[in-house]
Length: 174
Image 1 (tube, rainbow, N blue to C red):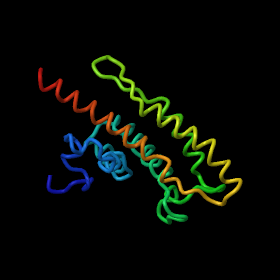
Image 2 (cartoon, one colour):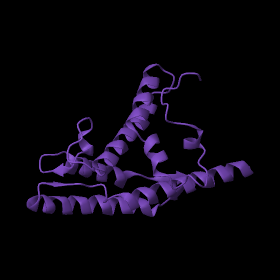
Image 3 (cartoon, rainbow, N blue to C red):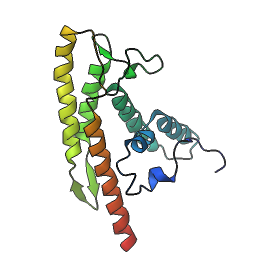
Image 4 (cartoon, rainbow, N blue to C red):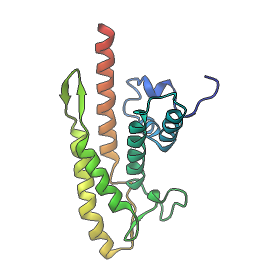
């Protein structure tokens, strides 16, 4: 197509090479607000089935989760979840909702359930966040959260990418 709805997405986002399987940036670009907007737009135009709105909803929830755990500055004006967590911010509520979502995620291939340790790690990270941040906010005014999440992100997406590669290898043999 000469005009793309989501310009940052390329074939390397779909056909993940061994070198890119640990590239969190690619996963973050796929599960982003821009992809959510594109899916909604294409659904309204009926280029995608209405079920694509569920995928769009998942994308924005994960995008918000990434933002809420990735604050690096005290105030980020355009996306408040990228601001530091404080007693009046939405970080704790977003974390609670994200934990509920993560607990519901299930992977399945050919009728076989697949368990990823990274899902458990996300649950541990979010649960720890819900316990630790309120304690910290009793003593300090804000918390920058970008160091809370790096291992979970990398482990989660490396497992997903490995799974996708295994599925591709399996399908190519048939």
